[in-house]
Structure formats: C-alpha cells, structure tokens
Length: 293
Image (cartoon, rainbow, N blue to C red; front, top):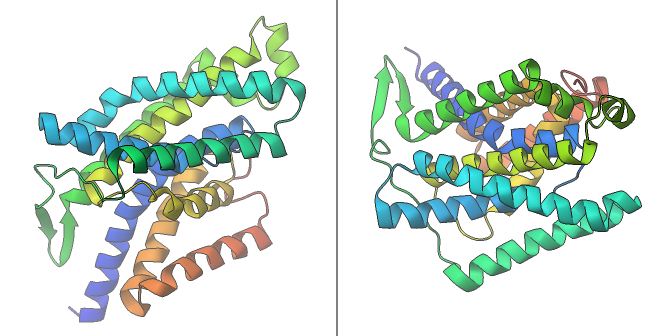
C-alpha cells in the first residue's frame, strides 16, 4: 500500500479517536453554554482538576483511571450544582449573568488553577492504565488502546446522556429550560432546579473528560488553556445545544487537526482546524446541526 495512503488512513483513525476525546470535553459545555446559556469558561479547568485527582487516586489505589473518573462524577455533580446555586443567587436572578457572570467563571478558573499549583505544584501528572501500552493492528492501521478505550467510554457516556435528554421528562425539561422558562413554570417545574441539575451534569462530564485525558497525556494545572478555544469552537460549530452536532464537530475537528499535523506539522493543525470553523460559520452561522432542543 502507498505509504502516503497509510499515513492518511492512520491520521484519520487517530483523528477520530482524538475527536472522541474532544467530544467528551465539549459535550458538558454544550449543556451549560448551549442549553442553559451559561458561558462557563472554567469548564476546561474542571477537566484538569478531575484529571489530576484521577492521577493521584490512581497512584494510591491502582484502580483504572476511567473507573475513578466515573466514581468522581457524582462528586463533581454536587460541585457543579453548588456552583450554579452561587451563580444564580449573585448574578442570574439579578440579570447580571452576561459580563459579571463571565467574570465569575473566569475567577473560578483562576482559583482552580492557582489552587492546583499551590497544592500539587507545576509538575505534570498522568495515569498509566493497564492497557495504555497496547496497540491493536487492523492491517496497516494502528489502534492504540490508550486512546481507543477512553474515546469509546466517552462516546458511550454521551449516548446515555442523549437518551436521557430525549426520553425522560427531566431531560426534555433540561432541553427546554433556556427556550421557555414560563412554560416550565406552567407545568409546575422550577426552572432554577432544572438548571441546577443540568449544570451539575455538565460538570460531571468534565470529570469524565478529565479521567480520559489523564490516560491519554500528562496533565498539569495549566493544561486547561489548551482546550478552552477547542471546546468552545466545537460547541459553536456543532450548533450549540445539539449533542449530535457537538459529536460530529468534535470528530471533524480531531481528524482535521491530526491529518494536518501528520502531513504539514503540528504547528499548522490549530490554524487549519479553526479555519474550518470560520468556513462553517460563514456558510452556516447556526452551526452544522443548528440550535436544537
């Protein structure tokens, strides 16, 4: 087989696996930003917090990092619900959630990052899963389990979330809360309670994404800066509240970045990927799938 074709195929496959991780990182932001209209710029910082906690717990318990992230998810849900209560009390109910709310989450991000540096130091941490060194081969294509297992776990979690949002009464209320709060009140549903629940879910997904990232690469307190632009770009490209669009955009983003890095060098990959975002927004401003419930 042509070596360039082999490189292309492996670049596409690796990009899809990378896109699965991007989807895990972006789907929580799709809930807070797309469905709840909360610009949680601290979302990647919560991912880093989870990744470093997973790395520390793995070093002491030896449990699988993805299992540890699942165990941390309820704790992060409580953290997210509490954070939303503070945000709602001081900003949202007074109508100050635009600039002041953004500044609030910027402050949360800064507190998390500085707190991690002060407690754990600037060193990188990782979780070496038992399967991390194993690579499956399908002909000329490599499938490193270090990326395959986290990506598959993330996609399974996103599938469960999509079923919850579409099939359950609470899930449909979450999808509707940003569009018609008064209609929810007529159904005797407290919009604030629904938003607290949904924001907790978004932070719980940050915990899952952090566990996946801890397996894939070493993380330090400032690693969230790498993902801020990417996760917001993916959510916007996919169509804000569309989970399906978020997944498709994440996979496309991963493939474009990886193929570009393979053939033209890593320095070109972000520019090309964000260039694709600009092209999508130029011809379809609502994103690939539009803003859907």
